[in-house]
Image 1 (cartoon, protein in one colour):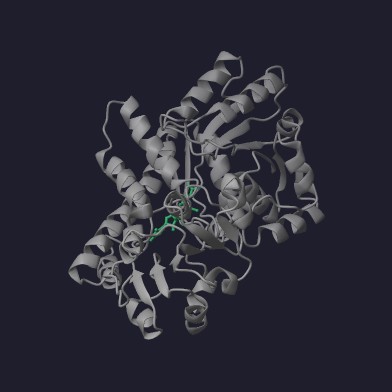
Image 2 (cartoon, rainbow, N blue to C red):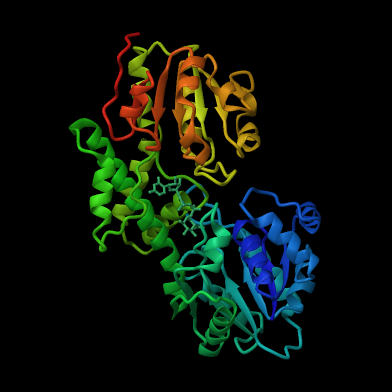
Length: 450
Ligand code: UGA
């Protein structure tokens, strides 16, 4: 099968590469020529474990190619996956301008094309409910019948950091469309490609489109719920880890996404919660739970800085604060909507000096805080970030932070104050190593007085 992925962002590049790895002939297209040139050499524009190796392997076996010529690429493809970005606009709705541009080229290229076989146009980008229908209408208006191009929706559920694993072992595949034969063709493609058995749910376009937003919003809601509970645990002496476990053992609740932290970030949850609220508003439905999820998350990102400020009686100016972890979660260099950004902004506003350490995300952070170059020190080692600091804040649970040499860090710091926003440590462990500390869900243990 000849497959074309339009958009070499996270979803397009990973799915395209994995389809090639399964033996298909895949062409990945992007209008960014520089990016395409880098990809041809096997250079990946972001960090995702295992991706670079897979790209090189499939380029070398001639199954994976890259192009910036959309017209030519689609003409020769049977399946055209649209995987361009759908970022949020100021009003929260999804910005579909990239999709519109792609469709314009597709229409002008295929308007007078002699079809020998029906092409499938499949949206993998997360799009508002109703988009697929609009695309189908647009084709019709331009004289391209559904016999020649069938529009399908096939939302993607990959997680950054474990996207390749997720691609090969999906928990479900969703295919939405109006044409039973087209749905069947994509279904068979997955069935023959994936060895891992998983439910393939076929449905209409609207259901497939909306299911992606509702899945992400529900997960985000679980996180906001457990974050509020952890704030209550902090005050009452209840153990948040134990509560998550007790709740999670109930199959109706499920144990995942009950880990409290400094709020969810990334390119998906914040954008998709907003977009669901927006599309519901357009339909005169108020998504009150999603709205609460969003506002709880906004507060959660910096709520625990209160403890740091209390510790220093609000005399925080010129204190040096070390940040452990910048990316919105481990195993990625993505810092979009990362809680660390809000934390750093708050600290800078209070005139603190910042030291940061992250195994992958420092170069992305530099681009965001260009103006604050003098107040942020980018550290290359754990020793550097700890030395002479008045507090360390653990914001991302990279594995390397699970085995910190706490005694050494304690001695390197100016004031041994450790704030753990990811439940990597407990106050019991940290106090045993001589730290004053705050761990999410527990009351702060401050033995020193400032
Ligand atoms: C999310 C979904 O999990 C994927 O299924 C979906 O395909 C993807 O969005 C997308 O729409 O493309 P991702 O954004 O990569 O994936 O990250 P997650 O692993 O879901 O984590 C999101 C955020 O929630 C992170 O900031 C993480 O730290 C936070 N989180 C997650 C918690 O605070 N607690 C938890 O228990 C779990």
